[in-house]
Image 1: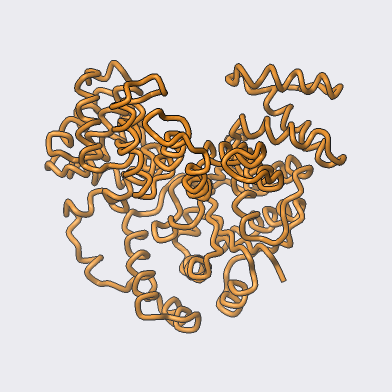
Image 2: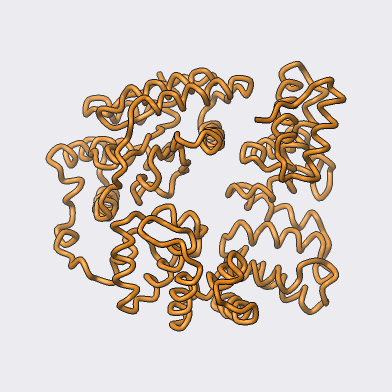
Length: 479
């Protein structure tokens, strides 16, 4: 029985099998293949993790979607994109990593993030000493044949979303799901989707809603825009749709598919959306002014729009405006108190950045209780949402017995969580905890120090890592 089942589109089984072999190097019991009707429900029930390799072909394959639906229902789905933007929208709630194999460095980071997600679900944990070999094997497997450059049509995710909703609302079990897929009903659940006019403003952003813009980073949103979607966004932005104008602002900021990378064009679209009091456009005006100071948005205008978005309870704006009001404990007491109120509101809304910064406020601010123990629950919530800074801070609390009882095991696990995301402070602290341990711990520490020693942008941690390697009579080789 496989712990990890790797699902791929028909015709892409060799890539899936090679990827499963890479996971096996790490110690997982993994198998792979294209979904088939006879064993789809059985595999979904047996596997601890269903890893779907999303590509253009996979996004268009009903049986791949059916397997993903069952895994999503069982909360054991992990998405891996072999082509950016191919994960259908209904599955965005499950973990998703980018594994486009062309960029070696980005692929390695994506693969390590994927291993972290698998570790959360599988009883077997990855062997870190085999990671480099596994990365090389997985990348080689995915490069076995060229992939088409085209992207799936924008309406396919929308139709699948309707189908998924319908399946679960009416309580479809695995058997009824099979019956729905077999005649093609999975992609034809709601006739009105096909009949919808192509110029409808509500369809301009295709899969994106105002909630997506609040909960997801603008670069993440940009990565999901393809040329077909871009044409729709541009048309509706020109027609005055504020959400489409905001998406067009993002498209130009990021140089997304179908958009010219232009800070000036981004500013024009953000201005148009902000004029309609769209909170995302107001907030992105602030972001654009910091990303591209010469875009044409003045600092005072950007600050005013940030404050307006925060007043509209736009959680990213609440966090950024709080940090602007009270960047440190030397800020006026009144500003610190207002920052605390903003951060609490963002935290209550479930924003992990808000939770992390509110925890810092509780620990450090002169306007707060200065109580590390009060910060712990907020750090826990943020760390559980993958906020690396929160995981690092909480790990340090447990390591040093600050605000919580000393717990080195918990500290190590939290440092490991953030280290897998290449958060340098956690990588260094984890290596310091491991270097005096057993042989395998020492090897892991050396690997971490070596990676840190090659991070030229880490001007404080990089030289410390070099010193640690010298003390261990080791050296770093940076490409």
